[in-house]
Image 1 (cartoon, rainbow, N blue to C red):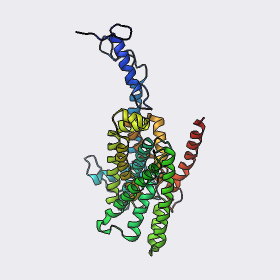
Image 2 (cartoon, rainbow, N blue to C red):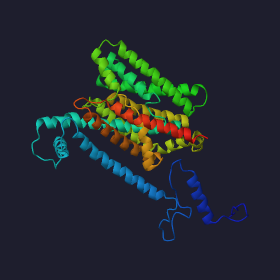
Image 3 (spheres, helix red, strand yellow):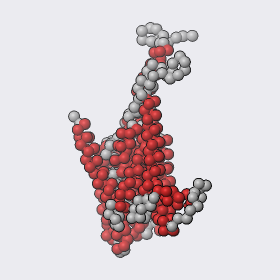
Image 4 (tube, rainbow, N blue to C red):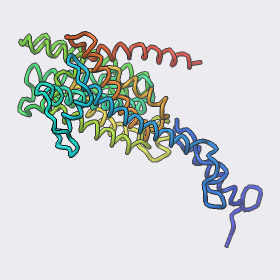
Length: 403
């Protein structure tokens, strides 16, 4: 049997092969993947793993622990936020009401006041579920867009996707467009508007040649302003003063209309589908964030991948806007915080972003309910107050990195 020789004329040893394989594996990792396999070999003579020289296993354990902690925190926050509002309700009573309605075996049989039962089950539980779903939808949409366009300033609001969803939903509310679809009309038109806006932004960005981050952002800002003008024109043209006021308040973002209806179901399903699709496609997102050349080298078509993820982003954004209005900056702020916690690998970043987005919007809504009692502050005002300074910090850091 012939033996292939190396450059020096000798057969490569097993240690050379192991080192070469480990080096190739480390170099092929997506950007932001902290750690990697040990360059000394995967296992020792006794079958146990060697030293974690680059920290990949410790980083994976740390990321898993953070995601688990965020999950527990999100569940606890759901219970706590249901007790906050003009009428304060203890967490124990909240758990008792929910357990009785769900028929859980450990539910207490002690009677609960009818008004308290109605506040928890009819008003606040749908509201916190909607807030959690909307926060997750916007956060994962921002994380996916930032990978697709390789720009840390990208999010559904800045790229005009939220503006398209708002225009479609406003047309359904004010003029009854798509009334044949019943209560699903607002969500369907919001999805059509979001997808149309996203495709328009990409078409404009590609008109001058290759898509660049700057061209995409400028196209998104232009399309967003244009769609905002269209939405304002629809409001001005409407004969219903009540409908116009409702749309104006809805455009600022609010969870006050959340109930057990189709909007809640669509938002929860969109969040679950979005997290599943983007987590399964995490390798593709990693490749897109590393550059089109690397994606092509891995056998991935960047354009097809972007279109596929664009559909998922449009679905999530449309569900969020249809259920809670145009809430900005969640998709911008949350993915950056998640990267600080778990790194840039999208297999972990997407679930962490979804949980952080849910937490952020839950507590922002709780603050909106109590800060100006008995009036309610639009939640979009709170997210903008937090997101605008964060955007300025990102712009300053981006400018500082340039030579």
